[in-house]
Length: 94
Length: 485
Image 1 (cartoon, rainbow over the protein chains, first blue to last red):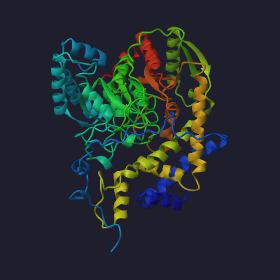
Image 2 (tube, helix red, strand yellow):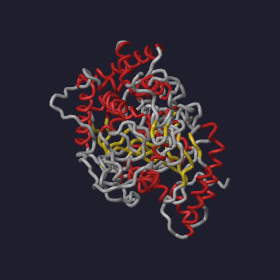
Image 3 (spheres, chains in turn green, red):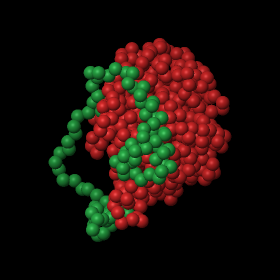
Image 4 (tube, chains in turn cyan, orange):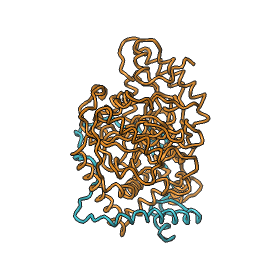
């Protein structure tokens, strides 16, 4: 794995990295990916993919109104709020 | 102390119902025991003594009116990945250090409804990612058998608490072995139920297709009692199985004659310690002595399980942990006016190294250009692993194998190399990949440290696994050994 790839993935998952962190992840992720190479030995052509180990159907509940959390409950752990809203930093630069 | 802390769930329950002891006495005893040893173990992240004593008083009132169930008045520890309303639920992460849920997980609601007493929250690897509890952002848990050793993980706090007599039982969660492996390393019993048997509502998500809540206790009977208390269909979990209620204690006394056990050769790897091999082989002999027939079986895809798991679990984790953005709850980096920088620094400061590693690994496996080679391939391998198990379960009723190839290792021994830590889980990962139930029970000692034997069965075979564990524990006394701490 190249350093540029580590930086690209870190940007996708929104994690800031110092230079030391980036280099350490590059080494560790490379050695983990080497382990994965082993899977290529196994012929899986025509094998269906398993997403869930137990057969499940789509579950729909009846369309009946239920109580949900109150705005106060929902906001109780908010780092920043304004009235009944979560407050975020500016999305668009002025 | 009245010495009640060593009682099993079953014994404590019977004494409570006969009113020989009160829940307040039992709870106080456990709290004193916590006080005595917790500074050497770090098995808890949060201890809730006042609330526990209030719950114990309520349980005593309930017992006085005769409206009890087997878990009424019994103290427990809840892994800190399971939501508890009003009690902070940190997932052993800086990210959620001050997060206080506004609702209970379904399993917590169920246990509180039955009058159980929550003593506090269990230490663990951050978000369940690890095999030694050294990835806790707060402090590593120490093994009560030797405090220089790890307790296993990720539910290491739960296993250490049960082994040291801090609580009669605990709730852990198992994504790749996180209930069974620490149970093995601490000499207690751990059950990973069939995927979907126990509701995941309120379990903070790590890898949704693999996660399952399970009990840790000192014997198979106690695990059956706890499973009775937490299983059942939950409309709030769309992956919950529509199973009718079962009493898992009812078939426990049945003998093992006629039962067919398979020993999967692939689980006895070259990396397995000789002392572990000896103890597990002696355990298998004992089961044979109890009337079970034993035959070797082969699960040839076992060697692919590690790579399969470390693609699927991080992929799901990278999606699940996208929610920690510093906006809705949790740690939030404020020292900037830029939204993206705030988010990136929130995740940089809030997550520990193993969590970041898995998020990045998962995002890589899912990213365009690599999806087919990694994620799709792993899902296909998952099918082959399932088929392997399905094939052997036509020949045998259950499998017997080691839980971990090694006994508890020294703290710091495997933290430098993530792959070495991942290899510890080779015997437990395939079970989650296939959604199967499995039980780990103590079967001996090596280097003075406990060894665990793993029983694996087809979907919804918990009753059989618990019956085998119980029969084994009627004939042996490994589960009665206690660490001197």
